[in-house]
Length: 468
RNA sequence: GGCGCUAUCGUCUAGGGGUUAGGACGGAUGGUUCUCAGCCAUCAAACCAGGGUUCGAUUCCCUGUAGCGCUACCA
Image (cartoon, rainbow, N blue to C red; front, side, top):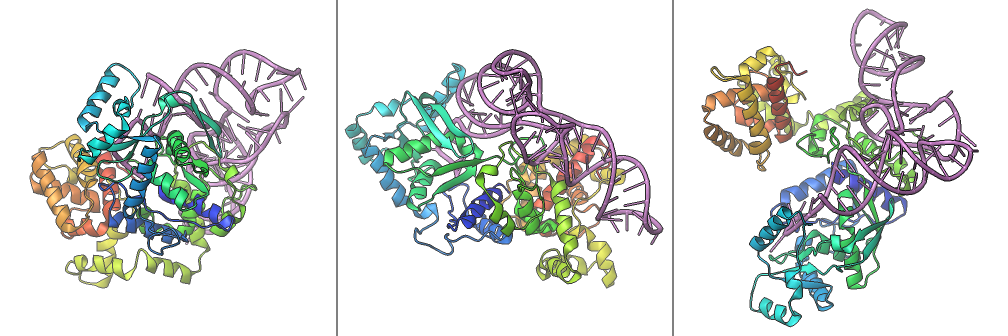
């Protein structure tokens, strides 16, 4: 959701001014990046109708557009900075850095690199690196004075240089960090406007320092407010469905989602709340963005989506239904699980309804069914919660085999008989004690839906009151 | 802890030195109606606090408070 939000504003600015909207994949963290997550970004942006002019899949004048394929470029640029003494080699081990952090914490000092390796003579550092000693490249921030950086919406923002860390630019695995890769690519790809989330604002002095180090003209920076959970923390999957996939599955329309997102921190001059992407582009100006972090409010999204839905002709609605909820693909996933268990076509609707429903209710009866004999609602609540937040959260590959291994292993760790946990999960995920095989069912239901339902079920157990 | 950003109804926001501070979601009430939804109408609901500046501040400035973010060889 956050990516879509930022992409929308970037897209609108580019379209409004006849510019180019560039999609670059920042996959420099090998742990977190995968082909699957990249595919999800493509699919989500396409679904929303935010087409890019340059990108990994379509190429462009500044290819490649995947940072993982540009390593040589970053290494050259890092070397350039080192030769200009705008950066330096650092040989400190992770252990030393950790110890340093601990020490600083204990002494209530400011955190940050202490500059040990910065004192190394360049020739000495070069010798050690050439000898194969593991190292990173760090930014040499000035130790005194101020950096005054400009944000389009906030104006000049001042930072004491002493507060700004000597950021790692190139990791010991040879990959760049965001800071280096971003600055180098933005320059090379001729990016005029860096519109990104507010969480980057505190890194801006580092980035500006990098532009200076290279002798480059920095682009315009504009930091968007962060989307928030209802409790006002930065939006997260813990507290909100943030996957575009979830909303798509639930049958929200891309136009409605785009419209809603455009209302976050921005408003039409005439305060009109319903408008198309095209109208948004026409009217859009960065200057109208307001800075209070907007809470993502599903109920208002629902209202807006209802407006869009009711405007459709029955034919159009049918097409939507066929494209998403009742797609052949979806139905074909469900039918094999249901076929043996029904005798007539009409029985399908009763038996399979939970596959298509959104939230389930957990009345007193359902709560009783979730709690095994000899266990308390509290225990069951806690177990379901940990299952959702830890075990299932970490499960990237959502298939029946992986699910089964995961949940069985989890039951073992918790010391619960499999059957007891399975029943709790079954009732939580389907609302019934009888269902098709659990893991196939969970697989078809999808990660977002399952996690949402289990979380709700756990809540119901905790409060003891029926969740609606 | 340090640094930075932000602050108008519960939520999204408009506005801006003089306004009955406007709209939308949600809520309440009523109308339409066989029911529900929808639609329509009405109501309740806000300028974080304290100091300045000013004839006058919700608006400008300062301080405080609160929220958020950053403080990684994550982005």
